Length: 378
Image 1 (cartoon, rainbow, N blue to C red):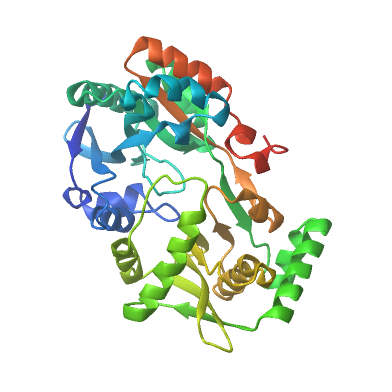
Image 2 (image 1 turned 90 degrees about the vertical axis):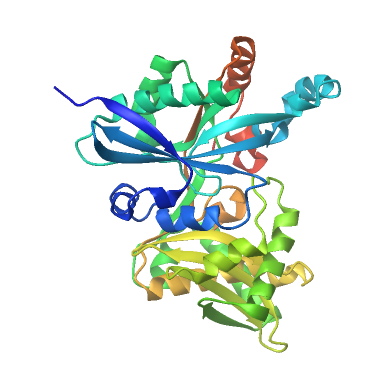
Protein backbone atom coordinates (compact mmCIF):
# COMPACT_ATOMS: atom_id res chain seq x y z
CA UNK A 1 0.00 0.00 0.00
CA UNK A 2 1.39 3.38 -1.03
CA UNK A 3 1.99 6.12 1.50
CA UNK A 4 -0.40 9.07 1.40
CA UNK A 5 0.55 11.93 -0.90
CA UNK A 6 0.65 15.49 0.41
CA UNK A 7 1.75 19.01 -0.56
CA UNK A 8 3.48 21.65 1.58
CA UNK A 9 3.67 25.21 0.23
CA UNK A 10 6.91 27.05 1.03
CA UNK A 11 7.92 30.70 0.47
CA UNK A 12 11.55 30.19 -0.65
CA UNK A 13 13.71 27.81 -2.63
CA UNK A 14 16.12 27.84 0.31
CA UNK A 15 13.67 25.83 2.43
CA UNK A 16 14.02 22.84 0.09
CA UNK A 17 17.14 20.64 0.37
CA UNK A 18 19.74 21.25 -2.34
CA UNK A 19 19.95 17.49 -2.94
CA UNK A 20 16.24 17.37 -3.85
CA UNK A 21 16.66 20.32 -6.24
CA UNK A 22 19.57 18.53 -7.92
CA UNK A 23 17.57 15.32 -8.29
CA UNK A 24 14.34 16.95 -9.48
CA UNK A 25 15.68 19.75 -11.70
CA UNK A 26 18.88 18.45 -13.32
CA UNK A 27 20.33 20.08 -16.47
CA UNK A 28 19.09 21.12 -18.97
CA UNK A 29 16.29 22.38 -16.68
CA UNK A 30 16.82 25.63 -14.82
CA UNK A 31 17.53 24.47 -11.28
CA UNK A 32 17.83 25.93 -7.80
CA UNK A 33 20.31 28.58 -9.02
CA UNK A 34 17.60 30.01 -11.27
CA UNK A 35 14.93 30.30 -8.60
CA UNK A 36 17.43 31.74 -6.12
CA UNK A 37 18.28 34.48 -8.63
CA UNK A 38 14.62 35.26 -9.34
CA UNK A 39 13.80 35.50 -5.63
CA UNK A 40 16.64 37.92 -4.99
CA UNK A 41 16.34 40.19 -8.03
CA UNK A 42 13.79 42.71 -6.82
CA UNK A 43 10.83 41.22 -8.71
CA UNK A 44 8.44 41.15 -5.74
CA UNK A 45 6.33 43.96 -7.24
CA UNK A 46 5.57 41.64 -10.18
CA UNK A 47 5.63 38.11 -8.77
CA UNK A 48 5.13 36.28 -5.49
CA UNK A 49 7.18 33.09 -5.59
CA UNK A 50 6.09 29.87 -3.88
CA UNK A 51 7.24 26.25 -3.99
CA UNK A 52 5.19 23.12 -3.55
CA UNK A 53 7.17 20.47 -1.71
CA UNK A 54 5.65 17.14 -2.70
CA UNK A 55 5.64 14.29 -0.20
CA UNK A 56 4.93 10.59 -0.20
CA UNK A 57 4.29 9.81 3.43
CA UNK A 58 7.10 11.56 5.33
CA UNK A 59 9.51 11.46 2.37
CA UNK A 60 10.01 14.54 0.16
CA UNK A 61 9.74 13.28 -3.43
CA UNK A 62 9.26 16.33 -5.65
CA UNK A 63 9.15 20.07 -6.26
CA UNK A 64 6.69 22.28 -8.15
CA UNK A 65 7.73 25.94 -8.58
CA UNK A 66 4.82 28.38 -8.38
CA UNK A 67 4.23 32.12 -8.69
CA UNK A 68 1.40 34.61 -8.33
CA UNK A 69 0.96 37.41 -10.86
CA UNK A 70 -1.56 39.99 -12.03
CA UNK A 71 -1.65 39.15 -15.73
CA UNK A 72 -2.73 41.81 -18.27
CA UNK A 73 -5.53 40.38 -20.40
CA UNK A 74 -3.86 41.51 -23.63
CA UNK A 75 -1.03 39.02 -23.00
CA UNK A 76 -3.24 35.95 -22.81
CA UNK A 77 -6.06 36.49 -25.29
CA UNK A 78 -5.87 37.01 -29.09
CA UNK A 79 -6.18 40.55 -30.42
CA UNK A 80 -9.40 39.65 -32.21
CA UNK A 81 -11.27 39.08 -28.95
CA UNK A 82 -9.67 41.83 -26.85
CA UNK A 83 -12.66 44.17 -27.39
CA UNK A 84 -14.83 41.66 -25.52
CA UNK A 85 -12.73 42.39 -22.44
CA UNK A 86 -11.88 46.06 -22.97
CA UNK A 87 -15.45 47.33 -23.22
CA UNK A 88 -16.59 46.01 -19.81
CA UNK A 89 -13.10 46.79 -18.51
CA UNK A 90 -13.87 50.50 -18.76
CA UNK A 91 -16.48 50.00 -16.06
CA UNK A 92 -14.68 47.27 -14.11
CA UNK A 93 -10.89 47.85 -14.46
CA UNK A 94 -10.12 44.61 -12.64
CA UNK A 95 -11.31 42.74 -15.75
CA UNK A 96 -8.23 44.00 -17.60
CA UNK A 97 -5.91 42.04 -15.31
CA UNK A 98 -6.30 38.53 -13.99
CA UNK A 99 -4.84 37.50 -10.64
CA UNK A 100 -3.36 34.10 -11.44
CA UNK A 101 -1.55 31.33 -9.64
CA UNK A 102 0.92 29.69 -12.01
CA UNK A 103 2.65 26.34 -11.85
CA UNK A 104 6.03 27.04 -13.43
CA UNK A 105 8.43 29.97 -13.66
CA UNK A 106 7.89 33.43 -15.15
CA UNK A 107 11.10 33.26 -17.18
CA UNK A 108 11.90 29.55 -17.63
CA UNK A 109 11.50 28.20 -21.15
CA UNK A 110 9.29 25.27 -20.10
CA UNK A 111 7.08 24.33 -17.18
CA UNK A 112 8.12 21.30 -15.18
CA UNK A 113 7.31 19.31 -12.06
CA UNK A 114 10.33 17.53 -10.63
CA UNK A 115 9.71 14.07 -9.14
CA UNK A 116 12.01 11.35 -7.86
CA UNK A 117 11.96 8.02 -9.73
CA UNK A 118 9.17 5.65 -8.80
CA UNK A 119 6.63 8.30 -7.81
CA UNK A 120 3.18 7.95 -9.39
CA UNK A 121 3.17 11.12 -11.49
CA UNK A 122 -0.55 11.20 -12.22
CA UNK A 123 -1.49 10.69 -8.61
CA UNK A 124 0.92 13.43 -7.54
CA UNK A 125 -0.33 15.85 -10.22
CA UNK A 126 -3.90 15.33 -9.01
CA UNK A 127 -2.85 15.82 -5.38
CA UNK A 128 -1.06 19.04 -6.34
CA UNK A 129 -4.05 20.28 -8.35
CA UNK A 130 -6.38 19.73 -5.40
CA UNK A 131 -3.97 21.51 -3.07
CA UNK A 132 -3.67 24.49 -5.43
CA UNK A 133 -7.43 24.70 -5.86
CA UNK A 134 -7.68 25.04 -2.09
CA UNK A 135 -4.96 27.69 -2.14
CA UNK A 136 -6.75 29.75 -4.81
CA UNK A 137 -9.88 29.69 -2.66
CA UNK A 138 -7.91 30.74 0.42
CA UNK A 139 -6.21 33.62 -1.42
CA UNK A 140 -9.29 34.47 -3.51
CA UNK A 141 -7.28 34.03 -6.69
CA UNK A 142 -9.66 33.34 -9.58
CA UNK A 143 -7.31 31.71 -12.11
CA UNK A 144 -4.97 28.70 -11.96
CA UNK A 145 -2.59 27.98 -14.87
CA UNK A 146 -0.07 25.21 -15.44
CA UNK A 147 2.30 27.27 -17.60
CA UNK A 148 4.12 26.17 -20.76
CA UNK A 149 4.22 22.40 -20.31
CA UNK A 150 5.97 20.42 -23.08
CA UNK A 151 4.67 17.34 -24.87
CA UNK A 152 6.62 15.09 -22.47
CA UNK A 153 3.93 15.97 -19.92
CA UNK A 154 1.12 15.85 -22.49
CA UNK A 155 -0.48 12.49 -21.71
CA UNK A 156 -0.42 13.06 -17.95
CA UNK A 157 -1.61 16.67 -18.19
CA UNK A 158 -4.46 15.70 -20.51
CA UNK A 159 -5.44 13.04 -17.97
CA UNK A 160 -5.32 15.65 -15.21
CA UNK A 161 -7.40 18.03 -17.32
CA UNK A 162 -10.08 15.36 -17.59
CA UNK A 163 -10.01 14.71 -13.86
CA UNK A 164 -9.96 18.34 -12.72
CA UNK A 165 -11.84 20.17 -15.47
CA UNK A 166 -8.81 22.08 -16.80
CA UNK A 167 -8.88 23.33 -20.36
CA UNK A 168 -5.77 23.37 -22.60
CA UNK A 169 -4.59 26.54 -24.30
CA UNK A 170 -1.88 26.73 -26.93
CA UNK A 171 1.11 28.72 -25.72
CA UNK A 172 4.00 30.40 -27.48
CA UNK A 173 6.26 27.56 -28.66
CA UNK A 174 9.84 27.19 -27.54
CA UNK A 175 12.69 27.06 -30.06
CA UNK A 176 15.63 24.68 -30.31
CA UNK A 177 18.48 24.31 -32.78
CA UNK A 178 20.61 21.18 -32.90
CA UNK A 179 24.30 21.36 -33.77
CA UNK A 180 24.95 18.12 -35.65
CA UNK A 181 28.74 18.18 -35.79
CA UNK A 182 31.95 19.61 -34.39
CA UNK A 183 32.27 22.62 -36.69
CA UNK A 184 30.15 25.31 -38.28
CA UNK A 185 30.11 23.63 -41.67
CA UNK A 186 27.96 20.87 -40.18
CA UNK A 187 25.54 23.46 -38.82
CA UNK A 188 25.20 25.19 -42.18
CA UNK A 189 24.76 21.83 -43.92
CA UNK A 190 21.82 21.05 -41.62
CA UNK A 191 19.88 24.11 -42.83
CA UNK A 192 17.46 24.10 -45.74
CA UNK A 193 19.18 25.30 -48.89
CA UNK A 194 17.27 28.57 -49.13
CA UNK A 195 17.83 29.40 -45.45
CA UNK A 196 21.51 28.50 -45.67
CA UNK A 197 21.92 30.82 -48.65
CA UNK A 198 20.11 33.71 -46.95
CA UNK A 199 22.00 33.34 -43.67
CA UNK A 200 25.40 33.19 -45.39
CA UNK A 201 24.44 36.26 -47.44
CA UNK A 202 23.45 38.25 -44.36
CA UNK A 203 26.62 37.31 -42.51
CA UNK A 204 28.72 38.31 -45.52
CA UNK A 205 26.94 41.67 -45.91
CA UNK A 206 27.28 42.36 -42.20
CA UNK A 207 31.01 41.59 -42.25
CA UNK A 208 31.43 44.01 -45.15
CA UNK A 209 29.74 46.81 -43.20
CA UNK A 210 31.16 46.43 -39.70
CA UNK A 211 34.13 44.74 -38.09
CA UNK A 212 33.39 43.27 -34.67
CA UNK A 213 35.32 41.72 -31.80
CA UNK A 214 33.69 38.76 -30.06
CA UNK A 215 34.21 38.23 -26.34
CA UNK A 216 33.05 35.62 -23.84
CA UNK A 217 32.52 37.80 -20.77
CA UNK A 218 32.37 36.10 -17.37
CA UNK A 219 31.05 37.83 -14.25
CA UNK A 220 30.69 41.34 -15.69
CA UNK A 221 30.31 44.23 -13.28
CA UNK A 222 30.58 48.00 -13.19
CA UNK A 223 30.74 49.72 -16.62
CA UNK A 224 30.56 46.43 -18.54
CA UNK A 225 27.38 45.35 -16.78
CA UNK A 226 25.97 48.82 -17.41
CA UNK A 227 26.63 48.37 -21.15
CA UNK A 228 24.95 44.97 -21.12
CA UNK A 229 21.87 46.18 -19.31
CA UNK A 230 21.57 49.21 -21.59
CA UNK A 231 21.45 46.95 -24.64
CA UNK A 232 18.97 44.62 -22.95
CA UNK A 233 16.68 47.53 -22.13
CA UNK A 234 16.71 48.77 -25.72
CA UNK A 235 15.59 45.33 -26.85
CA UNK A 236 13.00 44.95 -24.08
CA UNK A 237 11.33 48.24 -24.97
CA UNK A 238 10.93 47.11 -28.58
CA UNK A 239 9.48 43.73 -27.63
CA UNK A 240 5.84 43.18 -28.59
CA UNK A 241 5.29 40.65 -25.77
CA UNK A 242 6.29 41.65 -22.23
CA UNK A 243 5.56 39.06 -19.53
CA UNK A 244 8.12 40.23 -16.98
CA UNK A 245 10.22 43.35 -16.46
CA UNK A 246 13.78 42.61 -15.39
CA UNK A 247 16.01 45.25 -13.82
CA UNK A 248 19.75 45.63 -13.52
CA UNK A 249 19.69 43.83 -10.16
CA UNK A 250 18.55 40.68 -11.98
CA UNK A 251 21.55 40.84 -14.32
CA UNK A 252 23.87 41.34 -11.35
CA UNK A 253 22.65 37.98 -10.02
CA UNK A 254 22.93 36.35 -13.44
CA UNK A 255 26.49 37.64 -13.91
CA UNK A 256 27.62 35.96 -10.68
CA UNK A 257 26.52 32.48 -11.73
CA UNK A 258 29.31 30.05 -12.72
CA UNK A 259 27.37 28.80 -15.76
CA UNK A 260 26.65 32.30 -17.18
CA UNK A 261 28.44 33.47 -20.30
CA UNK A 262 27.78 36.84 -21.90
CA UNK A 263 28.69 36.54 -25.58
CA UNK A 264 29.33 40.12 -26.66
CA UNK A 265 30.08 41.98 -29.88
CA UNK A 266 32.17 45.14 -29.80
CA UNK A 267 32.68 47.40 -32.78
CA UNK A 268 36.35 47.05 -33.64
CA UNK A 269 36.95 50.74 -34.38
CA UNK A 270 35.26 52.33 -31.35
CA UNK A 271 35.36 49.43 -28.89
CA UNK A 272 31.67 50.03 -28.11
CA UNK A 273 29.56 47.03 -27.08
CA UNK A 274 26.83 46.72 -29.73
CA UNK A 275 25.23 43.33 -28.91
CA UNK A 276 25.19 40.62 -26.28
CA UNK A 277 23.60 37.23 -25.65
CA UNK A 278 23.38 35.66 -22.19
CA UNK A 279 24.00 31.93 -22.47
CA UNK A 280 23.84 29.31 -19.74
CA UNK A 281 26.21 26.41 -20.36
CA UNK A 282 24.35 23.36 -19.05
CA UNK A 283 26.93 20.84 -20.27
CA UNK A 284 26.24 19.75 -23.85
CA UNK A 285 23.23 22.06 -24.00
CA UNK A 286 23.03 25.85 -23.97
CA UNK A 287 20.09 28.03 -22.95
CA UNK A 288 20.14 31.32 -24.86
CA UNK A 289 18.12 33.36 -22.40
CA UNK A 290 18.40 37.10 -23.12
CA UNK A 291 19.87 39.31 -25.83
CA UNK A 292 20.48 43.01 -26.33
CA UNK A 293 21.17 45.01 -29.49
CA UNK A 294 22.16 48.62 -30.13
CA UNK A 295 19.29 49.83 -32.28
CA UNK A 296 21.05 53.12 -32.93
CA UNK A 297 23.38 51.26 -35.30
CA UNK A 298 22.48 50.88 -38.98
CA UNK A 299 20.03 48.08 -39.73
CA UNK A 300 22.38 47.02 -42.51
CA UNK A 301 24.81 45.79 -39.87
CA UNK A 302 22.42 42.86 -39.26
CA UNK A 303 23.66 42.53 -35.70
CA UNK A 304 21.21 39.83 -34.66
CA UNK A 305 22.68 37.41 -37.20
CA UNK A 306 26.29 38.30 -36.33
CA UNK A 307 25.47 37.70 -32.67
CA UNK A 308 23.96 34.32 -33.48
CA UNK A 309 27.04 33.34 -35.49
CA UNK A 310 29.23 34.27 -32.53
CA UNK A 311 27.06 32.17 -30.19
CA UNK A 312 27.23 29.16 -32.53
CA UNK A 313 31.02 29.44 -32.76
CA UNK A 314 31.27 29.68 -28.97
CA UNK A 315 28.90 26.73 -28.43
CA UNK A 316 30.75 24.53 -30.92
CA UNK A 317 34.06 25.35 -29.24
CA UNK A 318 32.60 23.87 -26.03
CA UNK A 319 31.21 20.71 -27.65
CA UNK A 320 27.59 21.81 -27.29
CA UNK A 321 24.96 19.73 -29.14
CA UNK A 322 21.93 22.05 -28.92
CA UNK A 323 20.91 25.64 -28.20
CA UNK A 324 17.52 26.47 -26.70
CA UNK A 325 16.43 30.00 -27.63
CA UNK A 326 13.09 30.50 -25.92
CA UNK A 327 9.82 32.03 -27.03
CA UNK A 328 8.98 34.93 -29.40
CA UNK A 329 11.11 36.44 -32.18
CA UNK A 330 10.29 33.45 -34.35
CA UNK A 331 10.97 34.54 -37.93
CA UNK A 332 14.76 34.95 -37.64
CA UNK A 333 15.06 31.93 -35.35
CA UNK A 334 13.35 29.71 -37.90
CA UNK A 335 15.58 31.17 -40.59
CA UNK A 336 18.61 30.18 -38.50
CA UNK A 337 17.47 26.57 -38.18
CA UNK A 338 15.46 26.44 -34.97
CA UNK A 339 12.60 24.00 -34.74
CA UNK A 340 9.47 24.89 -32.82
CA UNK A 341 8.78 23.09 -29.53
CA UNK A 342 5.02 22.90 -28.73
CA UNK A 343 4.05 24.12 -25.26
CA UNK A 344 0.61 24.09 -23.65
CA UNK A 345 -1.05 25.93 -20.78
CA UNK A 346 -3.66 24.08 -18.71
CA UNK A 347 -6.12 26.46 -17.05
CA UNK A 348 -9.16 26.76 -14.84
CA UNK A 349 -11.18 29.70 -13.49
CA UNK A 350 -13.05 29.45 -10.20
CA UNK A 351 -16.06 31.26 -11.68
CA UNK A 352 -17.94 28.66 -13.78
CA UNK A 353 -19.26 31.24 -16.26
CA UNK A 354 -15.86 32.82 -16.86
CA UNK A 355 -14.32 29.34 -17.03
CA UNK A 356 -16.62 28.50 -19.95
CA UNK A 357 -15.88 31.82 -21.66
CA UNK A 358 -12.11 31.39 -21.30
CA UNK A 359 -12.38 27.80 -22.49
CA UNK A 360 -14.24 28.93 -25.61
CA UNK A 361 -11.65 31.66 -26.24
CA UNK A 362 -8.81 29.13 -25.79
CA UNK A 363 -10.21 26.96 -28.59
CA UNK A 364 -9.60 29.83 -31.00
CA UNK A 365 -5.98 30.35 -29.99
CA UNK A 366 -3.29 28.92 -32.26
CA UNK A 367 0.31 29.70 -33.09
CA UNK A 368 -0.84 32.02 -35.87
CA UNK A 369 -3.11 34.04 -33.55
CA UNK A 370 -0.29 34.38 -31.02
CA UNK A 371 2.31 35.46 -33.60
CA UNK A 372 1.61 36.10 -37.28
CA UNK A 373 5.07 34.85 -38.26
CA UNK A 374 3.98 31.39 -37.07
CA UNK A 375 0.99 31.24 -39.42
CA UNK A 376 2.41 28.63 -41.76
CA UNK A 377 3.61 26.46 -38.83
CA UNK A 378 0.40 26.39 -36.72
